[in-house]
Amino acid sequence: MQAEALSRVLFRFSAGYRKDLWRLLVRPLFELPALLCVEEAKSNIEAVKRSCRKSFKRMVGLVPKISNELVELFSGYNLRERGMKLWRDSEEKWCARRQRFVLFRQVLSQKEGDLFAYTPAEAITLINQYARLCPLCDGNIMSPTHLRTHDVLAPTPVDLLKWINGEVRWHKRHLKKLGLVFRRTAALKYYGTLCKSVINQINTIVYRRIEIEPNQ
Ligand SMILES: [Zn+2]
Image (cartoon, rainbow, N blue to C red; front, side):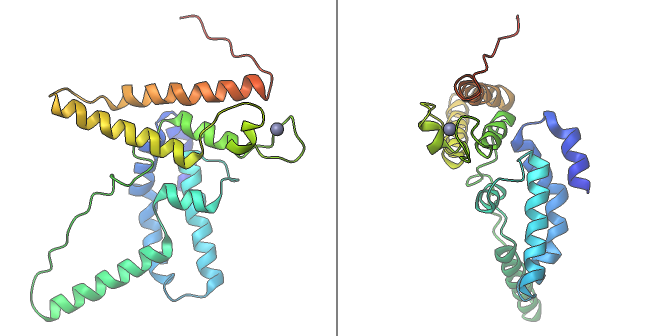
């Protein structure tokens, strides 16, 4: 699949960039199936949904175990809703054409509510970590709630992404007001380091692994 081949090449990019590419290259492939989701049989809809979620996970580097709810939230793409929208849009266009007036469509910024716009790759590593089984306890996954029992304070995936994206947006606006340049790479590097510190904490406490910083 295209998404899988691309995900290997793009491994070094931030998750935000990888999502942009998914939106650009892979998501359009689901637009037609999305339209079918409005009226198709349930089993077909489920198959399309699964395939769409799979492409997103592979492209941004999320492990298969991540819940469907989180994937839909992160991708901001709900096939049925999208299908309904496409359906309504084409109906509107058809009516407008019949009434011979041009329809002006408001272009909405997708970026504002996007939890993935500014997401470093380390955030994905951390979220993937939560889906693993805890090596200290039987059968428990290392959710943020479970990690708390081992004294590791880890944010939930949604809180983590909301916080990073909110902070980066705030800094961006602030720098703009001051007439300074916003550096996306530097911002992502900073938040990536913070995610890495939580990963290191999990490694040290749960895996009893001590991270040795490479010599500068
Ligand atoms: Zn445990």
